[in-house]
Length: 105
Image 1: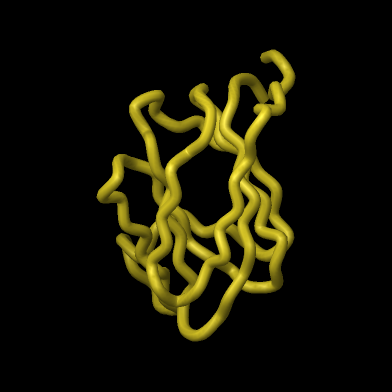
Image 2: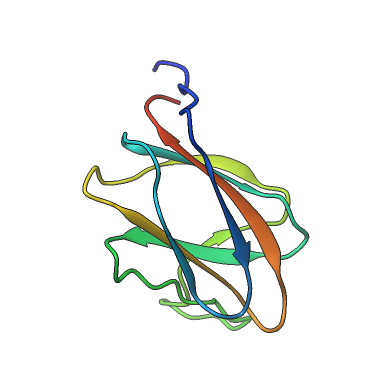
């Protein structure tokens, strides 16, 4: 494994209870996501139509998009074809995501 190479441009999403979507800057098969806020949010990657779904508090086999916990900093492998990241908070919460796309981890 090689270290993550910081891209020249990073992205920010002000996440609310409404679905938000941004184009992923840079290239590579790794995305680093930091939840800089105090609220859990949910993310999904895909094309320009990608939509994130907020998870609930019940037990279910299919319950929302991928959860990013408050304060979490994590890296994820994404398809090279992914062009956008979508995010949403459950309920009335808000948070801020910092996103960097590149290679390595």
